[in-house]
Length: 339
Ligand SMILES: Cc1cc2nc3c(=O)[nH]c(=O)nc-3n(C[C@H](O)[C@H](O)[C@H](O)COP(=O)(O)OP(=O)(O)OC[C@H]3O[C@@H](n4cnc5c(N)ncnc54)[C@H](O)[C@@H]3O)c2cc1C
Image (cartoon, rainbow, N blue to C red):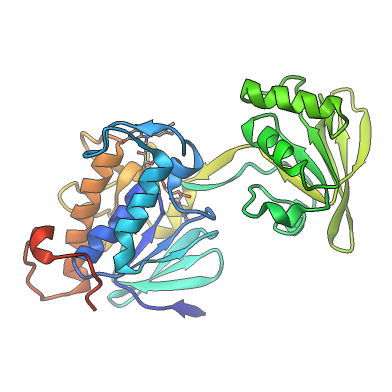
């Protein structure tokens, strides 16, 4: 069992409220490690609506969701949080006053308190139900793209009919050996300008479109993808060459993982005592969208307040016997890690 570096608080979820929890804990002298199932921080703001303006963040008459995350990350940075991305927090074990949070990557994080900032649940891709797909993930099958260059010179099949599928078909067409777009409907649900550009490239023979078709089978050679079979509604099949498959079917979210923390979910929320944000599990707090109490408003602003309350509660566990002294940030001085 690998136990990653010790910290005072493990935060489950790197959405806006999870990131602000790092700041709130840091201000009270607590170091945090943060776990998120996605490959990037930001939760719903980054995954669902990065370019939408938010109008109800104090001090910002308007701020794009992705920009808010950049600023929250900067605000938390002086407290040197360690982000464990691409892994799910799956359970909690107790060892005296210490808690061990286990991730799906086999990492164990030790802390005195846990803050669940799990939002609507661990985000993950909607996987097409294809035999053998798991073994190709990260090598030939990708649900999001972080490095376009990785796909230079490859034959690529993209599945889906929304903005991600079309935008990546347009972008990868410039560097790929071939791009085929597979969609189960004849019409695409993407920005009209993108669909018009797609039509142009299809007419020029640069992108192939296969509609109405669904993914039916994967064909592997030497542990990599070689081709896929697609099928229409009448069961007519076609085999098309593909070294890479990019299924863009949106995100799913999973809250059931929190059962591993011994907390009870009611209407997709974990009930807390709003005075402390503590759940029914001692030392485990919940903040943000996942936290439920009378009068709860699912707003980023409410989550920020809850994070400061949870941090105050966690202080007593991190530093038992130490008197808590309230200070404004102006008196505390520029944020810095005090260990
Ligand atoms: C389109 C849209 C517009 C919105 N507009 C506004 C607005 O104008 N103002 C406003 O205040 N709010 C708005 N919201 C709501 C706001 O985005 C949420 O309230 C906010 O994102 C909640 O933050 P959070 O950190 O609690 O959770 P989330 O943002 O949901 O982040 C939770 C993170 O936890 C991760 N996670 C969960 N469980 C696990 C696990 N077991 N292991 C690993 N990772 C896990 C998830 O992958 C996710 O990244 C909007 C929401 C949407 C969808």
